Image 1 (cartoon, helix red, strand yellow):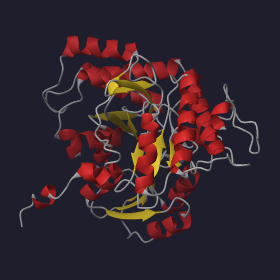
Image 2 (cartoon, one colour; image 1 turned 180 degrees about the horizontal axis):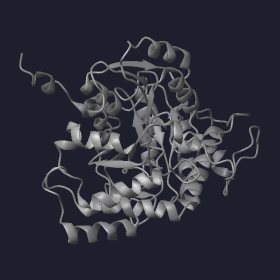
Image 3 (cartoon, helix red, strand yellow; image 1 turned 90 degrees about the horizontal axis):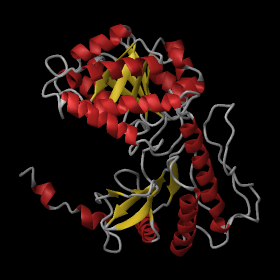
Length: 432
């Protein structure tokens, strides 16, 4: 059989086409207005970016990248162990280690590749326990290593303990989890997992791709949010979300980082991160330290939009973060709602098969601190009209609903519109 045969029968446009519109791989251009992008010459509100702190367009990052290009060129033209290391790499690694409170750190050119570094640490006799919703890069890292992989549900730590207890004597035991889950927007049960690791003598690895720079009192992510940094052995993080750049970092004990950078295939057999990308990430890290109000605004906006959508009748699941999963069961209905929102000037992300199982389709919505109150109101108005037209929400808002309070430091109170009352009959215009 010709291995290309499956490709001839595949038509992604036909699979996801709705109202003649291309759903995925659309070309987006920057708009002159923060919080917006241009699609086919038309500016629309971007309600789906992972630019959680609004730094991807910050001129300070651009200037740092330009300076690095002038100093070190556009690429490294070699792997880090040979001729691909620049001063900016070592500066960023040191800064990340210091920020995360770890002894050392090693970079990778992408967030996905960052997690693949873990394959260099794991062996075929080791036992790895992972959340069933872990990012694909964590799953692939374990597969590449040949280690035994067992999955558990977030609400079933007891089952997880049973799986870990089955590990043979002499096997390494590791628990890997996303800190903040990229689709559902909920946090891992880090208190339960670290307690389990202590009982079973296991190491804990947290992928903070979506919580790095965003959660915790200083932005160090889920481990800081839970006050459990000392009980987490390794942290991976991504620069393409809150840091507005690209690449990622693995941070932990110096001896482990030295081993991984020297032995992991994903580190040894790849070119070093482009200097401009590293410089942009380093500049972003400085801004995160200096401007905590960005995190406050990001969390305030998330809380406002969670509750605005719930007041309309939408289900946003168990998320307590700026990731807002709007449940829209049924692929056709989900894509229709997406299309009508786009017509109304709002871009969201439709998540259907294979990204979501049939019957659990959703729109993934997120915002930045740069979205204006006017833009947020426009998004709610669009969701109200499109949701009623498609029958996703009732014509009349629900009489009661459960408000969301996003994960934030206890000392931080919302600075803008608070959650709506669960029985408010006088919602703002956009929510009626």
